[in-house]
Image 1 (cartoon, rainbow, N blue to C red):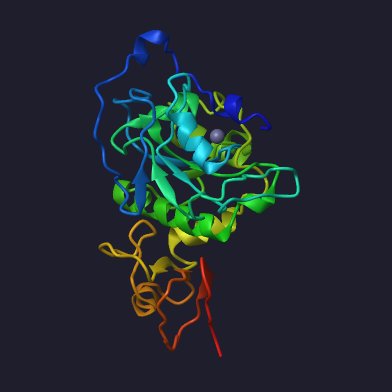
Image 2: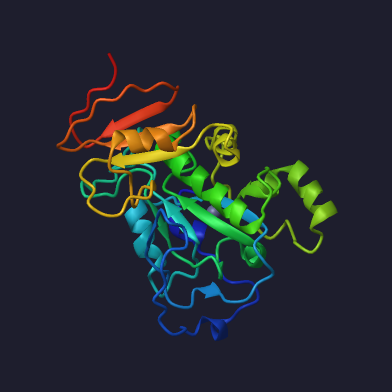
Length: 289
Ligand SMILES: [Zn+2]
């Protein structure tokens, strides 16, 4: 897990160079309304598969923007559907220092492979499963931020709703789920056509908070909204297109949800009458009396 490159280098099952011929450049748009788009190297996905019945959670062992570049390289025989930024220019006590002041905000999501295709992230499971990468290092709890969980949990909920994937731990799994005997047993009973022994990676690892993540996926932990007072585009309540005002953001989430505020130059006073988590960044912010 210390070597991010080899951790993610997954040759497509049964494939030689014959399947790596680049397809025509595809002017794709993100499927998820909250995502940006940054394609994998052309052709680094399967265009045929068995369906999308699972979502696999990974960590990158690389910084977010380095991960996006990594997947664009012709020599990277791996890809992923979505990648989530965990920390803005992060660092930890294990010597990881992102050193990128222009890093994207925590919680930003970039789509890399279209949902209609199958990314290369879990060897023989690829043709059954979506995948999401999260900026982070499996040995370091610092990277699994609340912004990351909220953003990825909402993304996973969207995928489950759209593709009728049950929101449970049999269908929402880690790349390390092959180590979980309960899951392996369940797979043997329910998906005998999938070989649970073909993966060897250990991400997202022991610091990934499955309880928290699943509470967001199922909605029991509330939802997330973003507010950017300076945002000039068409707001839809996602991070890539946030709400313009505090009132819009507060109204968009249920009690128990999370509100992320990118502070701007304008002010707004609002009485908030339900419990929620509020995080602000990017400028002066006054919350509470
Ligand atoms: Zn992985």
